[in-house]
Every structure is written in structure tokens, then in C-alpha cells.
Length: 101
Length: 494
Image (cartoon, each protein chain N blue to C red):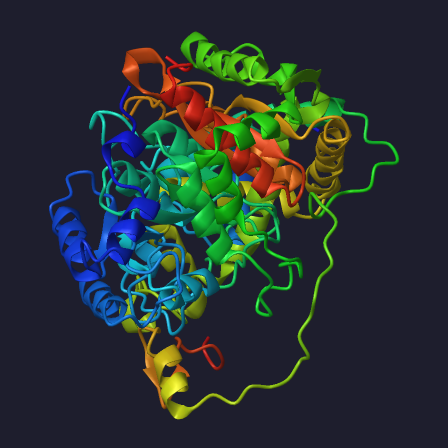
């Protein structure tokens, strides 16, 4: 289970996570991740044959609400969109997505 | 040693004064706000002066008459959203974020008439054990400013220990309420997973997170827990179970020595050998042993137990928590909340904005955990890391349920050491993670646990004793904690 983490792997996962890292960070994180994964490698020693993976520690009985649409008031919509740094006509504004080079 | 609970008035003492009209909510609020404004421990990120004054007026007009918490000053961890009040999670990525709603627990306590002093400093996104990961500077241990208050609910614990609030709300994913409670000499509880609503708690690791009280003593902890517990239609993991009258039950143990004796005679206390292994500071061990001894002499049955898989808890935790975090933190991309970073001005693409915003505005520890979680969940590694960790989690949870067939509570240390010096563990993430070695198994198993101060260790700093219970047995933990407080005050802990 021990994996070699190298700068290329760190760059790849940083891209998957949409995190811009500078070269110094790539170097530091590569070393730290290797150390932590080395520590985590102890899990390969545990016999887990036939053991169900636990999503929670205790049995839970989830209660779901009916999936009913909620219509927000104008005031509520404004308050939510106001959390964004850039909005227009009560919508979020983002850099151009379609039609670039 | 004088603990915060010996130095300052507890919530139930303030309540008595208020009911006897010997003080007013306005007077209490003015006193606490003045101290919070002059705080030297950096416990608060935002003060809630106008909301506090407004609430004090309501309480003095008797608008919250029946509530046991009316007029009591409350500090709120900054990862619980508050309508109209900045909520940052101590991160630059949520700077100036003003939530359009309040967390269920915040709303419940508002209805109960608690006076909100402010929003507490913490480790960024609750990731840390020393409060040194805050983007707005560290919190200092009130008893010694060169040391850490613990984390991640460091500001919550320090505000109670420094008498800047009477009670506080924190959140506990791997020990984030209990570990700072232990360092600061206050009581801190992680309830059973599903006991308290997480609606409005900014998600870190959703299968582990739980909101918990930080207070001066067990009585206050019981009163606060009673007021925040219960089913919430906005959190599907909260359970429809009756909430016991924790306050009344603990009150009886606290005030009635005969009742205490009866309670202890039927109490079975498990001592797990794994919690007393290498790495446990001798002065911490000595205090926990004194607590065990005091329980034994008072008639409790002490039973050696074993949690054989708990030694793998940290490894399991650092796969599961980071995996869940990497998914939960995807939402911070500069679009819907927080500031944006546009490296090429108007010509910045959407992708560049995501990467620059997240790369620049998340702190070091948060980025480390996102990377680790993204790795553990990535194609080709999922089975070896995430799935296997979840399987070992099953074994850890099973160890606890086996133990609770024969005992009512498990006792051990909360942390391996007392509070450490600032800067002493920041360069080595693994050594920092080790300070949660006794608290993490509890979150993985979903069971409740409380940390309570019991004497002092190295350098005269507080030591926390941890009591762990079977699912939904918070009351037994709080009653046992109240017994230990009585023992300590009778001189059995020194």
C-alpha cells in the first residue's frame, strides 16, 4: 500500500483539487504527504477480510424530508446572492466559460 | 489548584442571581462584553455587541421566562453560521461572509435567551489541535500566554476559561471540543453522533462532526446539552429520540451526597489498557489514576477492558476525515461566497480563478488535508485507502460495543500531555496529530465522551480526564463527571 509520492503526483492531485501550488509548496507537500501515507500504511497490516466498511460508527435511522421546492422571496434571494463578490441581476457572475479560445 | 469553575460563577449560579433579581441580564452582558473587548487571548474573531444588548433587554423584560439559560453569556465557534454576523471559519476564503441563516443550535439558544458575546477564533475549518492554524492569529492559553489552548475549538475553550463567556459552543470532529477543554481546564463534550443538529455547522468531515458544549462544570454542560439536543428536520442524521432532562439528573448528583453514593455503587467503569501505553505523560497518567482510585473507593466497580484496534484510529482518521474534507471544501471556489483571486485581471479564466482563489486563500494545513483526501479518493487508490480505512473503522466501533456490554463508562486521559508551547509542533504535522490519539477513536465509533478537569500535571497545567459512554448515554457521563468534581473538591484529586 506504500506509494511513492513524487512532485509529479503532488502536481496532479493539486490540479484535481483545483489548488494552485508554487514550486516550494510542491516540494514541501510531497515530503509531508509521503510521511503521512507512510504512517497510514499500518492499515495494510489489519485483517479486514469479510468486514463491511462503516460509513458511520453507530446505526442511524435517517429521516428524509419530502423533496418539495421552496420559493424564495426577493429579499431572501438578494441576501444569498449578496454573499458573492460579483453578481448581476441576482445571479452569480463568473469569468467567461463558453466562447473563449 | 483553582480551576476556572472555582474562580468564576457558573451558569446555574448566574441563573439563581437573575431569578432573585440580584442582577440583571443587562448588567451581566455589560460585564462580559467589557472583558471580551479587552481580551488579550485572541479568543474572538467578531464581537456581537448589538445582538447581545438586544437579547439582554428581552431577557430583562421577561420574554424568555422559562428558559434555564436566559441571560447567560454564550460564545459561538466561528464555524457555526449566524444570520447577519460574519462567519469565517478562521479562513481567508470566507472573509466577510455574512450568512443568510443561522445554525439550528444557534437559533435554539437564541430562543432560550442566551446572550451572544461573539464568534470564536479556531483552527481554520476546524483543522488543527493548537489553534495555530487560524488565518487571524493564534489563541493563547489564558493561564500561560506562551502556550496553546488546544484546538480546534481553542477560542471557545479559552473564552470560558478566561471568563469572557459563561458557556461556549464548539465542534468536535476528532477531539476539537475535548482536547482544548482539557488544556484550558474546562468541561467539554462530544455528544453521540446524531444527538445534536449539524445544520449550519460548516462541514469538515460529515460522518464525524458533532457540535458540543464547553462549560465551567458538569451542571452547565448538562444544561447546555439539553438545550441543543434533539431531532432536526434539516439534518437527516439527527435521531428522533427523547432528550433526557440532563440538567435535573446532574443537579441531583451534584447536590445530594446520598444519591451520589447510590449512583456510584451501581457504576461499572472500564479502564482500557491501550490508553495508558507509551507516549502518555507521567503527570497526566497520575491524575487519571487518582480519578480511577477515587471512583473505586466510593464503590464503583473498576473493570480492565481492551480496545485492540484503537491503535489504528489516527491512521483511519487521517484517511476518512481528509477524504470527506476534500469533498466538503470543493464549494469554496470564489463563486458563491468569499473573495476571489483573479491573477490575470479581466482575462482570468474560470479555471484559473478556482485554482488561484483556493491556492491563495486556503491555509497550509487545509491545503495539506485537501491534497491528502484527493489522493485517497483518486482512481486506483480508493480501495487501498478509503475503503480499507472504513473497514478498520468498523473494527474500532465493534471494540467499543464489546466493551459496553460489561461497563457503563470508559475512563482514560483526554490528551497524552498538558498544553504545549506555541510553535513546538507546527513544523511536524504527525506530532501535532498525535495529540488527538485518545479522542479520535470516539468520533470514529460515534459514541459520546466528555473531558473534565481533574488536577494538574507538568508545570501546574490542567489535566483532563475523559469519560466515554455507550451511544445515547450522555447522562451517565455527566453524572460521573459531577461525582469526580465532588471528589476533587473534597481533596481526593490533589
